Image (cartoon, rainbow over all chains, first blue to last red; front, side, top):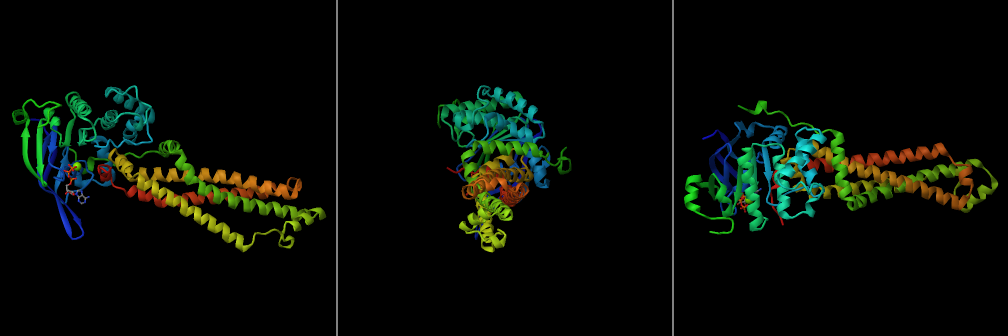
Amino acid sequence: MGDVMVSCKGVKKTFVMGKESVHALRGVSVDIIRGEYVSIMGPSGSGKSTLFNMIGGLDTPTDGGVEVDGCRLADLNSSQLAWFRCRKIGFIFQSFNLIPTMSALENVTIPRIFAGHPPAKAKADATRVLERVGLGHRLDHLPSQVSGGQQQRIAIARALVNEPLIILADEPTGNLDLHTGKEIIDLLNDMKQNLGVTIITATHDMKMLSCSDKIIRIEDGSVKSVDTQASVKVKVGSIDGETVM
Amino acid sequence: MPNATNIPEQTRVSWPIVFSVSLAGLRRRFARAMITMAGVVLAIAFLCYMLVNESVIRALIAEGSDELNVLLQNANVDIFSGGKTDAMTLLLISLTLLTSLVGIINAMLMAVSERVKEIGTLKCLGATDQFVVRAYFVESTIQGVCGSMIGLLVGLIVAVGVSFKTYGLYTFSTFPVSGVLTSLLMSLGAGAALSVTAAIIPAYMAARKQPVEALRVEE
Ligand SMILES: Nc1ncnc2c1ncn2[C@@H]1O[C@H](COP(=O)(O)OP(=O)(O)OP(=O)(O)O)[C@@H](O)[C@H]1O
Ligand SMILES: [Mg+2]
């Protein structure tokens, strides 16, 4: 077992809306190991995205704490959080979230600029990563000029360009068809194998399980079960991209 | 082992880079930028027309030729006031400037609320509040300054054109170069002040948007 990359300890999140309060997370404790591919599963509204926000330093827990790479996120100010998100986390979104007025290359260049690299170097690095995800021929296209699968590849390149420790992907295949979704998962798995980056995805999607080292099931804000690779194999058996359980 | 004290503050993005990012965005949203600019163009054109007109008329009055005085009287100019702009006109100019100020603020606030997700995404990628403030400030200011320049040109051309139509070549023989230059500078100054002021509120509203917004999926 490697060292712990993400450690959630008793994470609670309550949203107060007027008189009502929604308990989105009711005390979640999980450890995620460096280099693991983790899938977080659970029905809609179970708190997956809320947990992602905590790990990515986008939101603060009502109670409990999150440590990433040994650093307590609650101790960081907003500028330090920006530094942390920029270099340690690569975000991938369900709806891609590319900047519509920027070309593929500019979209991938911008995190590199935020990390303080001069524009020429940032561009060269971005070009290299876009080539790596198979989009070397689409550098100057706007997001609206490429397919959904290609947009998500641009987003993956953007997430990878600063060589993060963790990729946080909240339903990365949610807006893609089965086949394209499978390609995106394969690409993420390839990044895990070859770059050693820790991958955390949230999904309803069974085909995402095949390459997961760990599956965390969440229901109603609590962890229901944590399955490791060995037990996953038994449960999912030979499910491939086209089979739905 | 890292802790809060050895995570540094985020690197600052320099003004020239902010400028090029904003400019690229404006180029690709050109039609939109033109509409936002239209309000400034009109207000500054009006201001510039008024100021240039005043200094041209003054020069014409100062010339004191009889033929000119007839023309001036035919055009209903009060020769004895020396061509000075009256209070009513000043009020009108002020209202126009104010309207255009509110117009830019409104257009920029709309741009901010349309791009909540974009701002959230940029923050996920490492943008600081400061970067967001700067980017929106620059975007609004570029539109304001470009709008002012165009307005300046329009106002000048119209003022000179109208004067030429009424007073013919006298317009040029008495042309008050330094007076007109002062008018142009004053209009440009007003336009710049207007656009910078209008940029402040939207820029801070933009920076207050939270990165969680990036993950919220809306159809
Ligand atoms: N900003 C918020 N204000 C109030 N309630 C919220 C907020 N964000 C999330 N919630 C609530 O918290 C619960 C968990 O939401 P969350 O988005 O984490 O679910 P999810 O597992 O990601 O669902 P999905 O699979 O549909 O994306 C839901 O009941 C939701 O309504
Ligand atoms: Mg969600």
